[in-house]
Length: 355
Image (cartoon, rainbow, N blue to C red; front, side):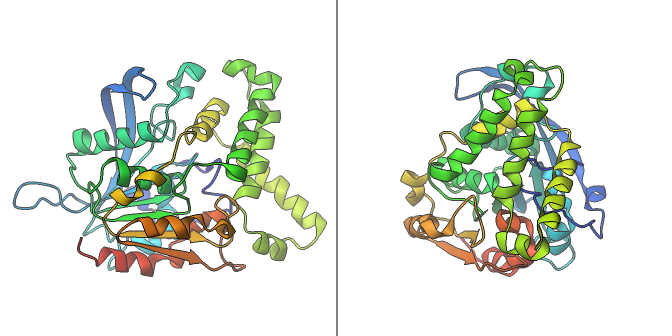
């Protein structure tokens, strides 16, 4: 299991999970032959996927209980086995009880055990974007798992944005959408700047050598990791937990040391951050007519609530409900999206709707 999620999803250390949900999962690789990227390049693409539960087929022989959960930038499907997510959702009687639902957890292009630059191609790997990632998810579902409709797409951070791409690119494939911790418009302003800062820092390191490094470009990676700590943190909680200079500095150094042990590759990180470059579903949001539960957090540095973007865009969808979670010392900044205790009751209401 990956213990480090470079950018968005594991910025606060997670407790050990009470149940080993990974032991319940089934892993497989789905190979998409001649996958065509938006750049026009093609290759056989490997998408790694973990599933929980058993597919149920209706009278027509179609799988009718599939739910897909999409991770954020730098993550993988395995991150959802953590206590704060899995123990709150997947158990008996819970909203995504795996005795009832067929839960699909893919590793997206460039992430986890799916095809990525560090497999050998380095910077010659096709420059994928969010449309490519969603198209790969769709082929994985249809060709690999035999799923032609989803009851829910729940996405966190990058996965949240993928939810909007799904809703506008393939309307109705998912009967419900639960996008958590993102906006539905072009990534610009401060959000774009800090992403580009991370890319620039890695590429400016002489050790990066155009992507052909023989040892990690640690100077650039240090800057990128520091930025991830700031971008994902809850300022209120950090102030309360680390009220002195020494405590704050020690936390920073400890967090960096933990991240430095990761197996994430510098080129992979560049591609992950760059893949959002042309994301912009806003003009097509009216195509989304299924029920939508959109949740952002008041303490999210990456998606600043004071800009009011989500509040405006949610009005463009026929059946969208937007919730802005209140800011407190207990919330987790951007990473609140994977702490199910804050939103599982609202998700349960969404699953009770009948599109």
